Length: 158
Image 1 (cartoon, rainbow, N blue to C red):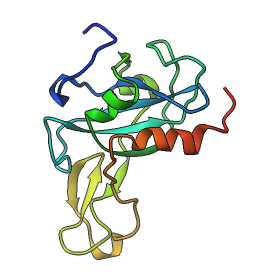
Image 2: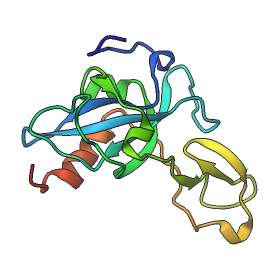
Image 3: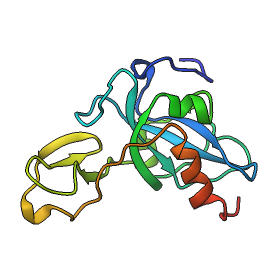
């Protein structure tokens, strides 16, 4: 695949792909595709599980950028999150190259049917004593990643 690449659906996505998230101070954050096809993704042809890296740069990330394994937040996103923030995928680095493992979540705040998740995929039913012990998987609006970057990363020194 040649980059930059503008995806039309999540069928073109690959875990490890990344895009720039322009911040209000002129610097850049980085979004990352982490998983496709998990049971919690409501529209598999348009949705994916991704996250906002704990990374800030004066230029957009590139395939040589050392992004590391730390993330600010994770969530289910629509393909428009890429298109409306950075506009295109800029490259791909295997998740293993940055030491990234999918985090654990709950599918709901508790109650019958709550699942323990790895990323957006079901592992098993959560027991009542596990309700509230993990974060609940969130669903992000298309511009939420930009708001997160501005809120959490704007004070970081490049």
